[in-house]
Image (cartoon, rainbow, N blue to C red):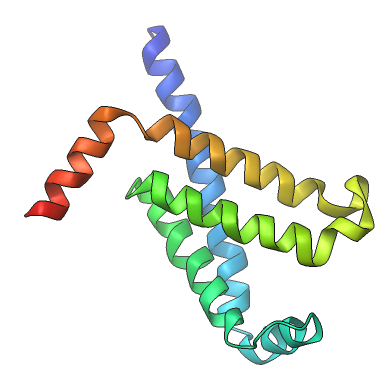
Length: 130
């Protein structure tokens, strides 16, 4: 197997696992909107954000797995995860606090940067223009 194929397999494994993780978290939020909404309200956030964040995670996770609009989905994940760190996890410190969300944020940013090459963006623009 050549090095390029191995790189593609490796980055695909990371992309798929990120998608599964985010989709699963989104599914949990969407299937318990009342509980998630109450949690958001306890943070001083609008309860409607529970659905919005859940859908970003669920649909975005599925899109990440499929490789659809990866840079845009990754940017949305970065926003969601940064929000989670700032509003919930930061006060707990790094260990047993925000390390998991920070890890997912960095992986999301990496996926966004990896897939934000000229060829990928040109293909997406061609699809949008049709």
